[in-house]
Length: 486
Image 1 (spheres, rainbow, N blue to C red):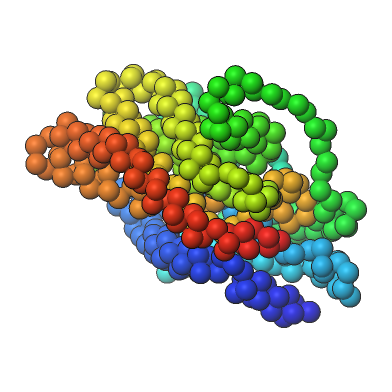
Image 2: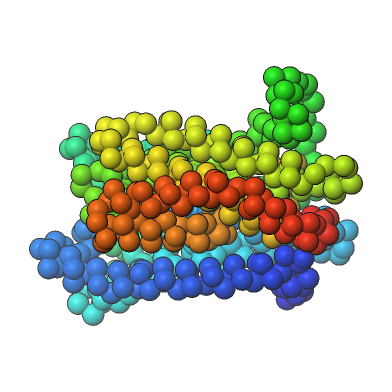
């Protein structure tokens, strides 16, 4: 039966209207996966000897910080790991057991990169421990316990998938715990370290995380199976309609009409609201690069400036026009000029970028030069990246079902790895310009070059819009066909 499901998954992938785009992204993601695999492998092999050279006990040190390791793993999963999606409704009318469908879907999560990548750290590190004379049985039981916790996080990600506020709560907890430990107010590792030490030194202790993992698997299985009904978890939620006029936007004509639709979409849908909420997290990205303890190369500061001011652009903007996929066909039958539609999306991105730049004014604490970098990044985002986002939208063939905010196996991630991969070309040019300015004269020249290109893009906006509009018209029918797919 599982082979039949694998066959159906393969057909669904190859017959999709977005097959070419998905294939290209998967190849690009493959290189990213290879990079992180090599990083984890190097850490797994070298961590023991690096800690030895630092006069630290390798096993004790690793056990001490495993609490942060697993908390960060859970946060990354909640942010990026998608729940495996199957076309459930047609299967329920066929002679497939519901238990088989659920077990197959849970099995897909086990093969996720987010589970496999940990093996490239824990396995080499365990092998080095055995090579260095540690008790073989203790090492193997410790490894079994840690990998059970990895799968505990995997099942927690499924159970907590609809609890959007928990992501912010977990991030806040980690920041507070790390801050308290850094300033020596409270050290959580004093309480968690003995637990992980017991997993190594007490032979039976490994069974606790194993039993927790099995219990969570059964809980997850029961939870998903309970929603696997056409009249229960798979139903479309019907909300009470609310009227909102936003008449003050009427003065902007067609542009105002589109802006009203976008504002209502953001306010009324869970996924769009979550996406906007996640864009706020980008405001704090610069703390990695702008604090006095940062060892990042100076050229990466413009990278941070673009991310800080471009959170809304990189999250919400990347899904244009997928946000409108549910009524895109109807919209294309109306006498609506593409220019008006694109212009409204551009203004929405500009407004989001300006608001992000104003909210980022707390970076003035690090000095005027740091905030100037953020302002220059905003200029580049408005002048260049906003146009690149709209251009990329012409080739977006993945619909967003705003009604599927809850349901069995629904993919409710408002933020995806593919989005970040599509953002890479938008960052290479400004970094190159900034690097050129630094090497020719100073950081000020680098900022001038980046700002100049941003202003140049703003000046050539009309010409760029003509080209983008032409691409949208060319891709119109393929986009409609893709959005019709369920």
